Length: 337
Image 1 (cartoon, helix red, strand yellow):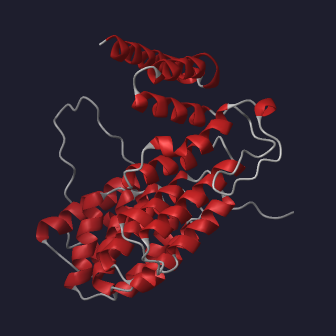
Image 2 (image 1 turned 180 degrees about the vertical axis):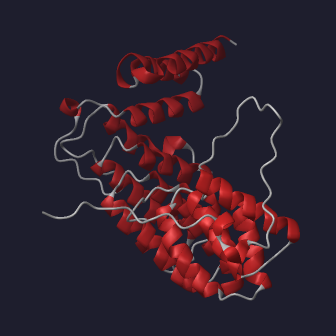
């Protein structure tokens, strides 16, 4: 029989370590009778007391790095420990690339902790090697391809260093993620950031050609997965950013508002690809889009918009029924005024 697995023993408390005997621990201040006392584990309370002790004296040394790493592993959201660690790294002239390798581990372990990414940003301001960071971020997306902090850090790297060599592969990178998950809203947002918000970095300078490329891209994506809200939002973003009225898309949108039985057979239109044969139609996002077109036209078209909002509230998007009822009331009020 195999022996039972045993967990690694806890390291000794700092209060029991002779090399820390010169530090006076400082307990966390609380009122005499706190209304909601926090019951910290003894191992965390011990480390935090000694951390406050070294902060009080202003010590910055290798043992401070060891202490702050211990605290961070116990509580990765301890902002003061992160900040003091960074100050200590600079004060003792530590190897920041060694620190970055440690962060490779901690970033995966504490992927959703803001502080680990902020610390990484501070390190990169000193190290200034963003290309390797893009490779590392791609690895973290295997764990979570939608983590806000990771995407925010990637966009900061691209925008701050703003080097053509960094931007050159971003569209291909986004394509890979969207091919893996066409509903990855974070990847759609990053595509918009890359193409429209940060300047085009793919070598094309013809704005009209880029706009056409993106419209074709998003329309094809919608045709494959019509009920993907992320792609419809991307389409709206393209039109809003370029000042294009939604009505320009009516020929594309209308087939997605019809039941499958009403689709035209063998329709071939490369500019307006039809829904896939197994699509679940009508598509709520398309119905909403068409209603927005009619609302913008005003006049008698507002009645068409209210009918579409009724269909959304009663059938296609019942979860937001109260919202669609509000849109109907506002639409009818606009007609009467």
